[in-house]
Image (cartoon, rainbow, N blue to C red; front, side, top):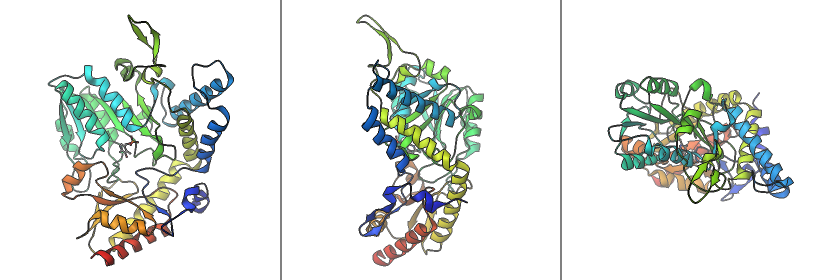
Length: 404
Ligand SMILES: *Cc1c(COP(=O)(O)O)cnc(C)c1O
């Protein structure tokens, strides 16, 4: 039995009130909440062994280094990554994607094609547009349909020997769609293209296996899986990470520095210039432990129940339309009410203590596709309840009474 009430006790923030009402936190696709187990790890770091890593001979530095490298191993094991040095610690998905897109500056040229899905987060669009501006390569868009699914027939037709890179999210943050990434990866590899999958929205809901996917790059942000902000992972296949030049220069990423010539450190340090988010990295490992202790199968089953319940209850509201009705989706419900602006609904919900996201969700092309300014997005985590969904539905009805 999935004991949600017991799980909720791990999250101190869920006890607070907002505008005099109990907090109903339904903005998990933007960031997840942090359990006490992870908060304890953060406090323990600063209270007991805060020190810079990899450089010191002293005890604190060694303790911090050990814990930080243990976190890398936890990440490696969680995502079934072959080698620990294929785990690059970054500040999150945005940093990870920029690291790769910058590295490809010398590896793509005019005449090359890069394929991007129509439902990407801006952080998986803009860095590639910048790469195309630098190199003259062309960005082409894999279209989506009204359900919010990629048109895979078109994707297969777009692939050619000109295709150098394909990038796509594993799960859409705006629509909840689970994309057929295995098919995307396999087809891209047949034409010799590399694939980057943005896993920021998938990591909270499922456990992705890097070796069985055979993906070239995969990105994660710790703050979406109960970890802190400002830390994340770039997974890269060793052969690709070897080909890419360093992204930033500085301490930690060098083998030897003279004013004539600098040689770079081995993986992963080549891509980890400067003092990293040490505490964040260690807490990232603790967040993975926390989620695994609950179990991803249990999380997925429970969240799917929440998704079905929320979808059914919301659709009972007259004039409510849900965007993103893919057959395979996770617990995200993006919706609008006929005649109302999403921002106005969101503001009234906030007065009732309900936190939802309103706007384009960093995915403006999706909103353009549907010809809407944005949506109200309720995104559920394993610590949400059906009772909270009832509060949301009542809140939306209340907003309609006030605004319509
Ligand atoms: C949140 C998110 C990002 C951006 O992650 P950051 O942590 O802000 O770098 C990118 N893509 C998707 C699908 C996301 O959900």
